[in-house]
Image 1 (cartoon, rainbow, N blue to C red):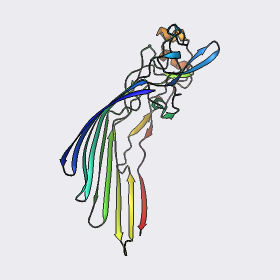
Image 2: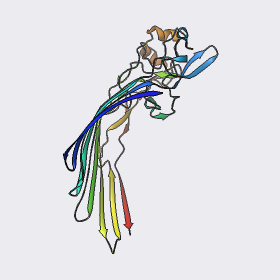
Image 3: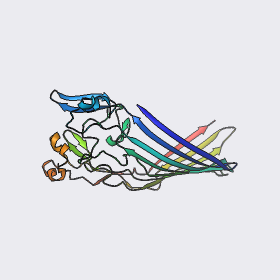
Image 4: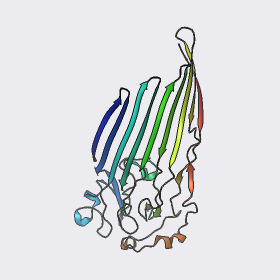
Length: 299
């Protein structure tokens, strides 16, 4: 496996305790190690290889895959990000900062932890290349567009202050773009994205905040007593965080020849394969607010 990264950054002191920074990052996946599989007359065959080379190529190119099916492409993942941050270090009783990231993650391979499988952690044996048709849409176009982990905008605001009468207040606030959503078709004991990536748009933009309060009393000598309160999602954000994208409950069985022809109409065939009545419905909201009360005695 190999990846290239380019990172450029600059930081400017605006005052003795205030700084402004900018950083650009570009990550390019050169190759990865994955299992690529196909049905043969001897049964299911799976090869650990670099997708797009070696055993994953057509037989005529020195690989093990029939020339009649689409050839396994290279794993592709491109990440671009611009990060801007304004920070004030602790002085005069308070500190704070603002951080904004504009980014883009595209390709056909989410990574060792498969973002297309809800973060499944099975490095080098994910499902991206298990089926020869998996890296393509139903018309034979290579998958492209935003990956499931893509967040166009990400904003973080944080700060804390210590008041003279012993109260410390801390705040963190976040705002982020929703994940892209893609129609998923169960086919030939595998799955594919028939309409390519991100055809269902994105989840809603989400913003939330957490707050921390701590009050400290000085007792005899060095003894101190503190009581603190942590409230997560004090904004009581309820934005939707997931949607059902699986279009059928029963896998479709289609010949390789019909898929390769590009003429297979999965929508017309759908009524025969238990259409998912939940398809397109929201399924998960942002976690509800929580509070934690704590006590501490230091001596």
